[in-house]
Length: 260
Ligand code: PGA
Image 1: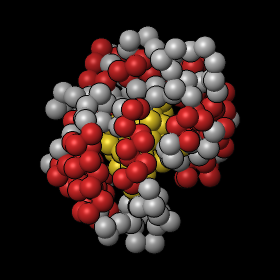
Image 2 (image 1 turned 90 degrees about the horizontal axis):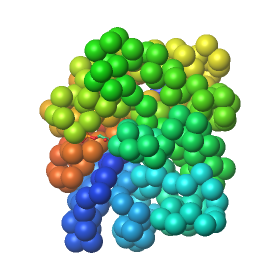
Image 3 (image 1 turned 180 degrees about the vertical axis):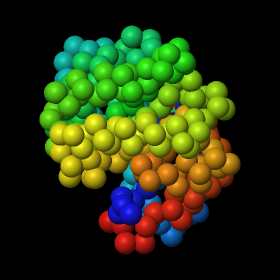
């Protein structure tokens, strides 16, 4: 039995506004009081200041949805790791498939972003996962290793375990068709095994998430799997009560003696 506490992260994508965010975060604060699990909210960048005002000194963390690999410079439209840090972020999502598919992130630049995040004191949440085509070709294992290896090569296995890895099959994101708990477990167990080949302790310590149409109806089954340490939640993080329910389920499934 593992001691890893569950982690539930709201990926709010390009949704929300000041009043809606306020209501979402206030509800979350009030209804996740008894917590062994860890919770985080990733709003669009302009709302990080609001997240900091509402969530500071609470049990809920916040983070960005992307960041530059550079500390500063002539990169119009980009946000640096230090800026996220200045607004109190704990986490930053890196390499989400919605960015990879539009050509914004590559396996290589994800390694650089991962390293830059750690250097700034942020915890990167690295997203990996196969497309429907790759899934149907039986290439899932190959794809996740192809996405993971450049990051390991860049930062080393010890540093990898300081971040979080989210397995998000592209065909499950926003489609309402979550992976079965068995499939998600098989791939996350494979990923943990891949890390273990290099460092057993890193494998034991790395937090592995599943993402892709997780909702209050399927969260208990998914989060009961031994290698699923939590969820990255998109659609179900737009309705406060749905997200809170997933947080409560994660809390119930977090071992009492975990280190949260
Ligand atoms: P979803 O999104 O929960 O809406 O499938 C998850 C994600 O994109 O991180």
